[in-house]
Image (cartoon, rainbow over all chains, first blue to last red; front, side, top):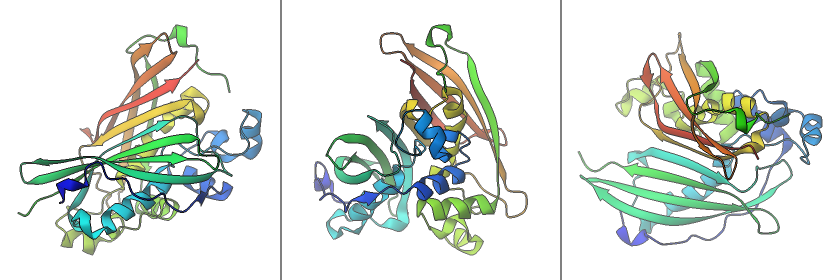
Amino acid sequence: MNPELQGRTFPPTEPYLVGREKVREFARAVFATNPINLDPEAARAAGYADVVAPPTFAVVVQEQTLAQLLADPESGIDFSRVVHGDQRFTSTRPIVAGDLLTATLTVASVKSLGGHSMVTAESAITDAVGAHVVTAVSTLVVRGDE
Amino acid sequence: MPAPDFASLTVGDVVAERSFPLGRDSLVRYAGASGDFNPIHYRDDIAAEVGLPGVLAHGMLTMGLAVQPVVDWAGDPGRVADYQVRFTRPVIVDPQSGATVSVTAKVGQLDEAASVARVDLTVTVGGDTVLGKAQVRVSLG
């Protein structure tokens, strides 16, 4: 893969509108049982405008940025050799149904390690007024030729 | 829902435990909900073709469910300020018997000034750890 990718920032993704039913569908898929994830009344009682997304929901928005990275011919990443190494979400506030989110990916680092490459991608997710919501960081391991 | 009382916490306290039985239907449901339709998560033939021992759970499904006992303990998903994991071992989901993911959540560190508890997760399948450095920072201020 291309080491010159380090430091590169991709264009912001198209805005993603967080739907209430999408949040509930995702919450059920990750076995969430907290009513604030599922019930708009419970969410409002806790001070939120609508249901709150589970902590890992940001991956849905981050995914669009990783698709940009993997599709870029300059990245030289062979998707079939990619393994997810680690993942982190650092939030300023939780994602709530009704949010309009935009993600911007920066390649934080590219490293080579014994024939494999490791790329750390940071996707900063902001809301409709440009305020930070959450940063999703993925380290992808690209296996070398065997 | 009220937050746990920060002052009453001690490093080493087990704050939550839960087991999650996964079947192939769980993987299909997560594929639809997340948009990750990589066929290694639902097709045995393709998993075998790429040299895997079987169909695997999405790493992000394991990460997503492992934090749920902490969310319930914290009382509000909005109190999770930071969550990280390392994917150390794949979770193979048998077509008939599935797989059971067990989670134990323990207080790892207490930041008194910020009222933030770091909760460390032990996540295992059949006794083997599947996530490393699984840490949740919960804001209890």
